[in-house]
Image (cartoon, rainbow, N blue to C red; front, side, top):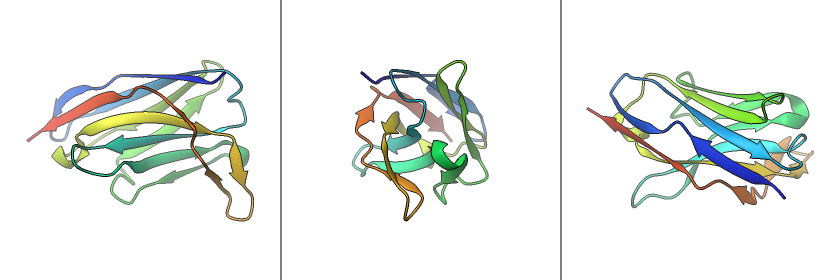
Length: 124
């Protein structure tokens, strides 16, 4: 049984930083892990992926260079370091896990495990 619990959200001013954490439990050692976000009235979007099988990361263009995804397997925790935050980063942030590796495109598909989310609010 996979279980994900996010923490670390909060309110910051433009230019500030936050670090989100996602505590994982269950058989996630070889899973892809990712951070998604959803703002009110907008579709959910992928922010960053941790591709465990190839030890690689992927970022949305909107956060590349400002956010860093990392994983501490000893602590069973996924992190998202967010720097230079902007008001448009305001959203509910979710941690997700996938066991479906698509080798042909070196990506994970079907993120089927989700946390409850943590709110990030950036004020101007």
